Length: 525
Picture 1 (tube, rainbow, N blue to C red):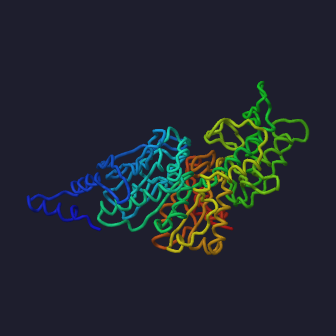
Picture 2: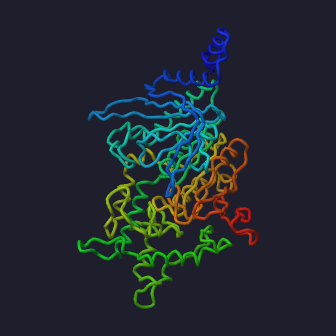
Picture 3: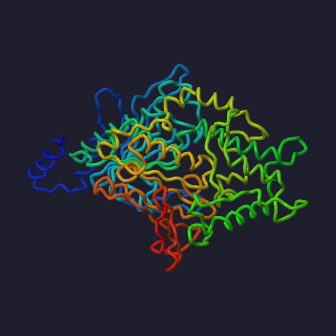
């Protein structure tokens, strides 16, 4: 509904006094009017509604210098909905921010969070958007802290509160989406033509929540490295740590010395040998593994013929690698969490470190156990009520979302040490099977892109981690053009580009032309 104050009163006053109301003045008045924004059934407190002039902003980047971007002039609104205090005096409420650019493209984008949320990130929409976040493209962008305010990215104290847990698991997304859409309509005097969601890690899980729990509210979503299986992915990570700890030398305190499981020479041997076996399977030796299905690497081939020396592994080291990356199984032989791909980031030192470069656990105390009771841990993870409430890993019925034309894109770094890319592949295949089969879903509704060498959401020791999935998502939703591939670049390989092909295809060198240029590659099964 058109706001009469904005569409009638301002021009009338301008004519009455013989002056022209500038577009900037109108935007400022509309922005200021949002200080009194309200919705029935919600206690909304607007703490900020002000115009922000166009200008630069520095964003932190994974493993590199801050990324400087030029943001457009915008109305920035911040607030809290349903603020309350629990029985222990702790304050809760769903914090949100909405950026409304002057040069609006008619679209709305909801930005996912990260970690255990609790932080209100700037509404920019940077996930999988290449070097041009959604706000720079003219999207109205919203963010939320998901209903609690944390002291750090992994502060889980809010789980003690019922409503805060529900808000975190799913409810805040629906609440802030409703607020943002109404606010957009009030500010621009017309609703958004299309609505999107993007996020990685916990934000990737939230993108799945958007498509699964609010199928009619969104037209497209991008889910990166989704933290959809956190209880079980933790088992997978502890499985790797315990398996490697079992072959680690012991310190004076009797604890495994995790940093001494492999020497630098050992780690270099694993990656160089992996590349010898798998690198050329995509038609070109370039330090990257695109043909994952064609990678048949076995650590047992690296075992020393005699005494341990540089250039070979002990039988215990090789067996530990193979067992660790195969993933945890229970006593009945059932896979509790998928294994991990053999990829070049296995030995990466940067945070988060590769699986074969074990260091301190960023989500808790260091892991020193040399064995893990998979049965007990799987039972405990399966019985976690909070995980059940927020589950996205088992829900595959996407009939309403896909039925109205919704599109869902996934991406995952093959070298992600926190959440296995194999888990995302498994969900994608189950989802496809439940919605008409792989061919139908891939053609009409959803695609998955695996990123060789990439760690968790970005970064890595040898990867091309800069790519734009937002443009092809919009093109698929609004023009019916499905993305066969997207072009990736990155600082690890200056001047190089490659296509990231939609699963199950991979980028393959055609055998001619500049091997640094993505145009000389094709997508093959």
